Amino acid sequence: MSLNKFDLSGRTAMITGGSKGLGAAMANALAGAGADVAVTSRHLDESAATAKRIEEETGRRALAVKMDVGDRIQVDEGVAKIEGELGKIDILINNAGINIRSPLADLEDDDWNQVINTNLNGVMYCARAVGKGMVSRNYGRIVNVSSTLGHVAIAGRTAYASSKGAVIQFSKVLALEWAPHNITVNALCPGPFLTEINIPVVNDKEVYQKFVDAVPMGRFGDPEEIGGAAVFLSSDASSYMTGTTLLIDGGWTAK
Image (cartoon, rainbow, N blue to C red; front, side, top):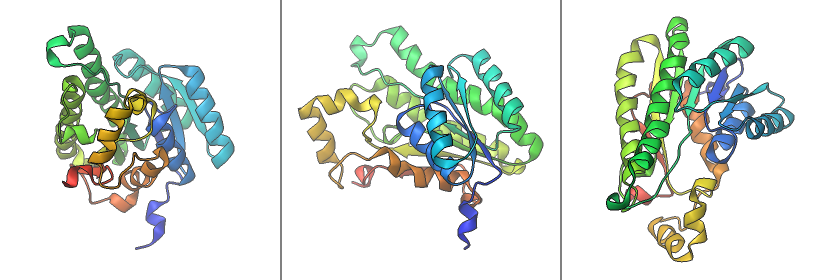
């Protein structure tokens, strides 16, 4: 197989939660493979800084967009802005997510709703808005970022694990619906990575060590290590892969 299958030249990607962490790493990887990228987040200044760095490092166009994925109106307006300035969206990486840790007995309704709205409703809003153009062009790649906690459980992660498990099922259903339109939909499931969302874990030495002990490779992942999987699922190299999950977790779920 030619490595040209991984080339994203001529493609445009939208990455939600793309200003930092895994989102920024995936945006940078896609731009490095030739794609123009739209970096979205709730904070325009952070998106702008990341977009500027990507342009300087890769030479690709990078657009910063303010978007709260849990707000349908902001999603629709953001997608329209991206399509207006970059022409189209061929690739969608639904990465934006939050985690509120709490035992169920102490979990507030607002916390549950906030996690579900961002992690699940946001995926739906973005896929629906971007999918219209993909269907009309008969091409698309959608990568929904779930988690190893969509497969296995940890106490105190009721809202987060529930939302990420639902993202996997959402991806399967959407894959069936849009397969006739040459659109692939897959779930990418990261394990523990050294990102902002895991700062509470990293700062607690006892909890951090428990995580490290659970990973056969004995460490957290570096954000850059997710780039190859993101490019693969976004490219023609994965053209016959849809409705499935790709785990990148250092072997955590192999046990």
